[in-house]
Image (tube, rainbow, N blue to C red; front, side, top):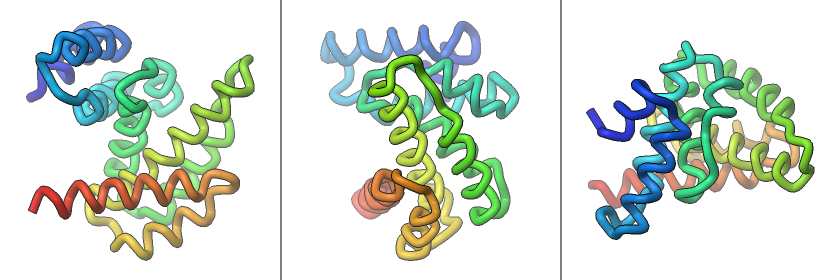
Length: 158
């Protein structure tokens, strides 16, 4: 298991994000985005798959990977990607912040994470996942970006 996953479980995802950013700043790791995904996934598990609590436990940084990880793991947890998309769509709609710019960013990260999740666990081929993303009002491009990013990462892993 990943050390940042363990920190998320034992302390909090916010604490794990602080630590992963320190590792990146000290050049112990080159990139913290993937580790932030693990932190987000661990946060969702820690909060018994309550997306709202897990999303709220994330911190900005590492190209917002924590938020992506929450949504990716949530999609993996659900069996039917079409059902999960309608459920997650409404969750992204309810993301809020007193600051409208932060709220828009959070909604965007939520949708992007859905895209990661639709492809990461081979629910759908990329073209179908992008079609599913079209159901997410205003953030379909961010969702599609998550689809493409995940597909490219999987392709490069080959």
